[in-house]
Each structure stands twice: as C-alpha cells, then as structure tokens.
Image 1 (cartoon, one colour):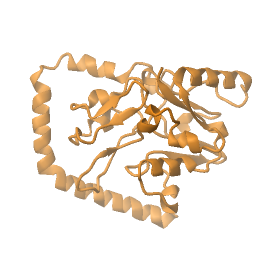
Image 2 (cartoon, helix red, strand yellow):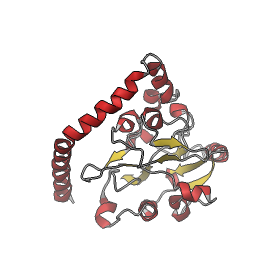
Image 3 (cartoon, one colour):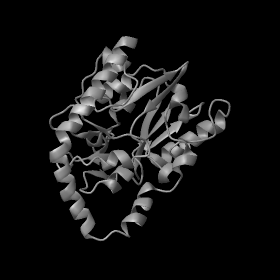
Length: 260
C-alpha cells in the first residue's frame, strides 16, 4: 500500500516549520529571507502561502502516474512503490521535459548553477523506506500535515468532511486529479486560489496516457536522435540560457527586495 500525505489547511497555523524541516532534511539553506519567499524554487521545495487568515501548502503532489517520469527520456524521475517520486541526478541530462509535463508546475531548475539539477520535493524517500514519517509531517505541531497509507488517509479525510461539513469544501483535492496523487488536500476554500490547477482543467486521466498515445505514433529512432540533438543544443546554448535566466532572477530578487 502506497504512502501519502494529507494536508488539512484548516488546521494549518502558518508556522512554516514544515519549510524549515524540509530544508534541513534536504540540506538546503533556510533563513528569514527564504522564509519570506512566497514561491517554490530550486532551494525551497515547499512553501506555506497566506491569504488573510487562510493558509495553504504547495509541494510536489507525487502523482500515482507521474507525467514528469513519463516525459523523462532517461528515467531520471521514477515512482517508487512506497509512494515518492524520486529524482536521480546522475541520469538527468537537463532537458527539462519534466518541467513542461508537470500539471502542478513542481520541478524547478538550478538556473544559476554551473552544474544545474532539477529540484523538487522527493517525499523523504529514505525516511519512508525506514518506516518513518516525512520530515514535514513529523515536525508539524498541529497535525495539519499527516503521513500514512494513502487509503487510510482518504478514509480519514472523508470522515472529517462528514463530521464537519461547514468547515470543509466537499472535496479531497488529489483524490482523482490526473489519476490520483499521493498528496491529498482538505480545505475550506478553493485550492485554486493558491495556484493549484482546477480539477476541470487537468482532469482525472493520468497524464502519461496522453503521452503514450502520442509516442505510439513516433518511430523508435526519434527518441535517440532527440537525445543527440538535445545534447548539442545544451552545449551550444547553455551559456546564453543561464545568462538570461540569471538576469531575470536578479531582476525578480531586486523587485522582491524593494517590496519587503
């Protein structure tokens, strides 16, 4: 039985301890400045957003049928039987197809690095295999983030909605979206208000099914040549690409700094 996370936004107090625990677990920097950042990035895998008195976490949804893994031509991303969608940096060729494929806009790229990687929440796979909770679930002081078997968490979420219909919208986000995810969300407001894609937009069909239908029409030699050409493109255009991305990042950081 696969593991999952249940995030109940009505129990969240916005303490951001999940952000800190995630950073510690993944050896990422964390400071007051990073805590104030309201977007996910290559150094911030999860973010707690605030609107009025409402809070919402954003993180990788760990889809049951991940589009990122399906789109990756070298298998750098893969779904484990325990639930997490893991990333193998040694296989990654930097094509960033995963970034395009993800319906939830989760994979981020280290644009400013000379040895860039794709970065995202990987659901603490070492802890999960060892029978432990994820770092974010373990640290959460209110139980807003809960770790467990996906089927059990679904039953828990359904029971919460049944017992408190005035507190929750009658929906478990992630239950069926894109074929189901291993991050389930309960909320009293629409998750779309915090940047999640609408269920109607992404549908219930697993994204890889769309990929498969297209790839069935593509000759076998095309993927090989796509890798070759991708490598050539990478070598010849990487310097300009990084320079442009760094300029954009500096501009964004300058804007953020002036508004804090």
